[in-house]
Image 1 (cartoon, one colour):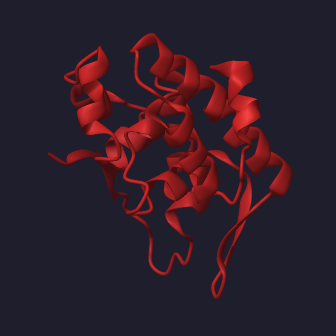
Image 2 (image 1 turned 180 degrees about the vertical axis):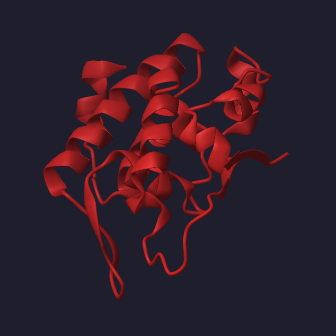
Amino acid sequence: MNLKIAINTDSINNLDLTTALTVIEQLPKDKAIAEYEQKLKFVIDYAREEPDPRELSEIPEIRLWFVRLDAAYPWLPFLLDWKGGELALYAAMLVPHQFNRSEGIIFNPEALEIFVMQKIFVVADWLKQRDITSKSRLQSMAKIFGYDIDDSFFDLII
């Protein structure tokens, strides 16, 4: 039951979310959406001139497409395949970072903290609206980025 959003050069250059909308809008709007938790992957086919050494997250056009997607579906991290690296890829599209060939993505620490907390707030509210328990899910999401959020924090927001 894996979900895939395929995007190509044309959809990226035209900021066209149609392929994403097609996948996301078919999902249940209620508690049943939990069946799709961590099942979503992106398949990105973006034409580049040779030799273009940039990672996908370093290409402004691709990043802008993801900014538009995030504006439409700010709760999307709930669906992303965290173990498959999709959450890290998604964050790289939205958070300033540098790419180091040996260490991988190095996020701007302050920007990453803002991103994680904003996603915690958005996803917590979105899950609450669907009557889906969220504390452990949100803590796990934060841990992907190296944040350990205390239980007492969730008493404030859930």
